[in-house]
Image (cartoon, rainbow, N blue to C red; front, side, top):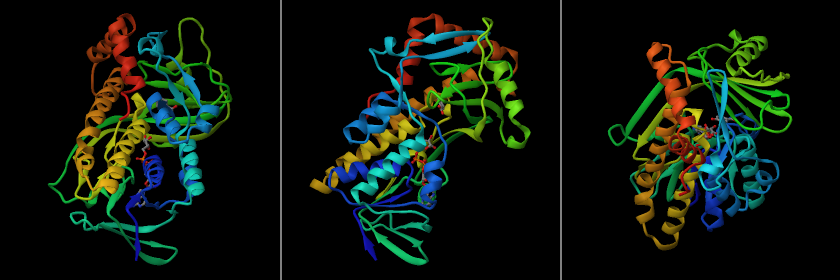
Amino acid sequence: MMRTQVGIVGAGPSGLLLAHLLGLQGVESVVLENRSREYVEQRVRAGVLEQGAVDVFREAGLAGRIEAEGLVHHGIELRFAGQGHRIAMSELTGGRTITIYGQNRVVADLVAARLAAGGPLLYEVEGVAVHDLDSDRPSITFTHGGADQVLECDVIAGCDGFHGVCRPAIPEGAITEYERVYPFAWLGILATVAPSTDELIYAHHPNGFALHSLRSPEVSRLYIQVPAGEDMAEWPDDRIWAELHVRLATDDGWTLAEGPIFERGIAPLRSFVVEPMRHGRLFLAGDAAHIVPPTGAKGLNLAVADVTVLAAALADFFATGSEVGLDAYSDTCLRRVWQAQRFSWWMTSMLHRFPDEGPFAARLQLAQLDHVVTSKAAATALAESYVGLPIP
Ligand code: APR
Ligand code: PHB
């Protein structure tokens, strides 16, 4: 039998950052992850950090590599009907910025910090199950290295992503789930080629959405909308590039440089929220509690916000016994979560081809885009949401 204050299920950005923030406040935790360290550090995900998220990393002493190697951006481009239009994000938001830094590098930095701090972090645990959530001694059972283990906790943090075991352990009827599944997915690639743009390009095209992002001066990150359930085998490299050229083309002869593709994957688009983000002594954070479609680049930032709020509430609980912060956790987070849902749904609706909707809807999207790039008020609204609400 092992014992800790906070048992953390999942070593993604949520679980690892929570462990680090708790450690800074002298709260003990054990982190349990069912995959291997290599798998989690190599899993390629999105890469946009709001300024508020970078601030959280800096204050926690974690921003060394982000500040040295992250790319600070002051604007984004919306491209439609053959023309690009810059949204001057920083000018419209009193100087706020975003930083491009791959989520797998965020995870690698957090793992390094956890190992340096000497905190328990167990990989390749099997059969994780959570128990006695309604008591003040919840526990986690699992198998590690062939041995059955029981971890007794004061509190459990469910940071185990959308497909984890914590949310399903909550009795039916105690939570409400809200969900929208979109009839398309994103095919994403990493290619060894200098980005053909300095800023992110979000493109609306009759064939579907495309996004030109980047990871470094040598590596481009690109996405195209494909049908839901699409098989990667349908998309040889030539077809991916051909479609990117078509969807990103402008009337003024902008060109897209091609390079070897070294990573590819297809991810479905979904909006999902569970309410409340708590059951008894189990607290859900990050993708375990909510999923946003990637068009607003909010997934990682919501995870950072959740665990920042949770770490402060837990530190107060362990220092004083007060449950005020813990009781407010779900409502505090859900307000921001629903704002991110609203923005992510809006960006998704404005920029994608919806196979079941006709030409009227497509024409309205162009009117919406035209409005955003010609009305300073509308551009400001987009910019404010894109750079993000203050954390927490
Ligand atoms: N036991 C232990 N660990 C588990 C279990 C389980 N039963 N199920 C899942 N996990 C692990 C996963 O392997 C993963 O490493 O939990 C971790 C959850 O990490 P993420 O899915 O990255 O979720 P989170 O940490 O909340 O980060 C949110 O991830 O999906 C992106 O866009 C999203 O950027 C956002 C971020
Ligand atoms: C990325 O760089 O992976 C990225 C950027 C912006 C998004 C989504 C993903 O909206």
